[in-house]
Image 1 (spheres, rainbow, N blue to C red):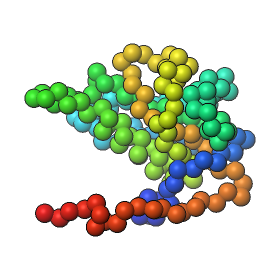
Image 2: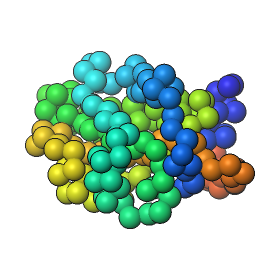
Image 3: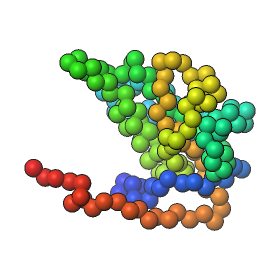
Image 4: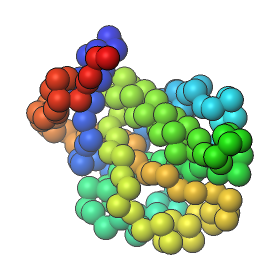
Length: 172
């Protein structure tokens, strides 16, 4: 898909077909986009957890109580390893949030390119996720997204309301 078409067609989808899982080959293609994403000093301080087993999905789904979320055949949890991220020496800035956001964006765009729906979620309960996935203390949950195909007959709204370039760009 042409890149400009890809970014214009991408939407956060809240409609998943529970009976249509994504193949491992497609999942790996999508995750590889996150793997090759840029990160500060190429440290790649993140981990991608793809939940597909019904037992673990049930535990993870308890972290976000929406019907459409519970229907997705896969859920991706992206973890940041704050202690492994680049730190700026003079003020201690840690690049973890930027690094993880870039990786997640690559993943979401790659999913769109493969016809796989996503919805970047931050309103989950981190305590439930930490327990369900036995997440270590040095790992920070930075986001989750369902991965799956929409139900038959679903059509994207393609109704992006965004500020104009004039509202957000300043040329100096």
